[in-house]
Image (cartoon, rainbow, N blue to C red; front, side, top):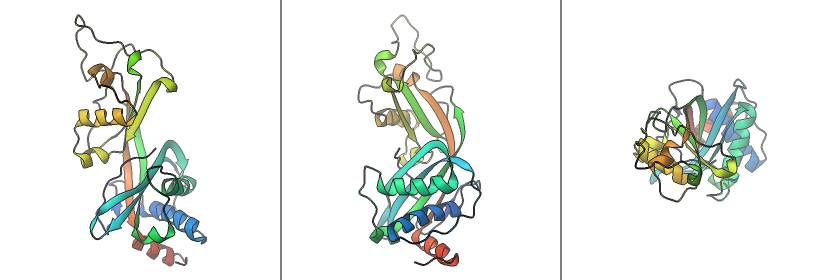
Length: 243
């Protein structure tokens, strides 16, 4: 699943307030890409091999513009970090269908951002989350399966969900997610974020309040860290690797 990442300040290592995600995680992902492109030997990992859902984002840096997205793919299934970071570093570099594969000549312009996802909770409604704190993962049935409000029925509150949705299969449903940083970056309020996620999920029709209230939303938080190429080179050389 590909998502729009944030634009970290150039030349800085960005860390979340918590220490869940550290520069070592970014270095390991960068090392996986570098070794895949050059045939070099990887540096052994030094962090605890815990399990987290994760996303790996590649951006390109330039002195003339803000960092630009070059690839971003992740998973909501908890992964052992030593394997998951390396795997998704390569998946996001080579298999994000929006971009051509990253090449060796681009390495010096790259930065790597890791997002480890934490604190998953079921929301009580599509508005039960906080901008700047939570990411959102939504799913909803095809609108033809949603009971419609009638003039004789009092409209439901946007802070509640549709009470009696039929069960639906994955073939009858839509889903999408946005990482926590996406909403502040885009300047969206909650309704704008939800409507954008509905379109991202693949629904191209009219968005009604009944549709919004049919959403099943899980909110989550993210611990993030970003490193650039120069940071990575220094780390690799410090650990006995060649560049």
